Length: 301
Image (cartoon, rainbow, N blue to C red; front, side, top):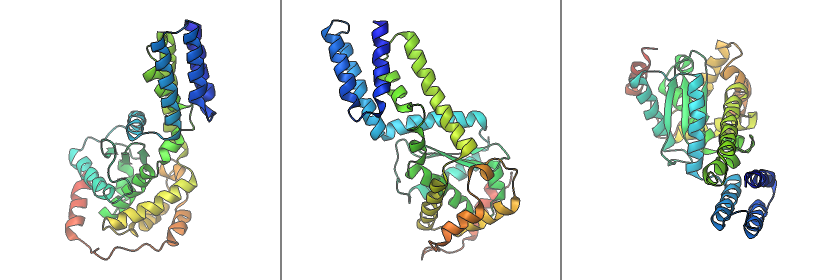
């Protein structure tokens, strides 16, 4: 039975790139049941797993996206501790919600979650499922709420366009391990189940490393700039604030870490943005109240 369990797991993984993966594994399960090596209940469980795996590879549900994103978020917070400033976190969360409502995915499973990271490194991250992070170092370079809104909109665009999810699909067959671990636990030995759990954890770490060390690909960053500026405009913020913030980041030079390593050069991004000629919406106007709340929220930084 143990050897058969290993073979079925191997079949699931080997069939990952097959157009009819569910049929391949289902046939193997039926054969094992016909030979008395599996109960009918075990065979049905494995067939259900194979169908779920095929679905996860092609079209991950929002709930699956959320739980994958939550695991990524946990790893990120293990690297960068959360800032313990309730007022500032509430403020960043509030601006996030305003912009999210004007994004392409205003509603998402369990909502959007924003968190300030307690590090001087200049950076921002977006994990699948609506998890957005901005560092204390990046906030210090901002001059107004429009710039904050543009950064958050950029990260929300990563979520909206599922950039992180697309990255996860290429790393160690994360979905296969997640589904196998959840659905076939009753058919696997404890040792095999532990191995699948470890593989899933390793996959999440791979994604975190991609976000923190390498960053999204250049085309994804340009797309996030494009849609992020659009979301900011629709939220009644000045989308040109992103261009100004990029200039400040360029002047700051950085140390080759964080934002400066994981994002394209400022002038390249500004050049891409220029072609869209973003301007504030017709209802936009400068707000002293907005400037005041920005300064109040960030005064302790």
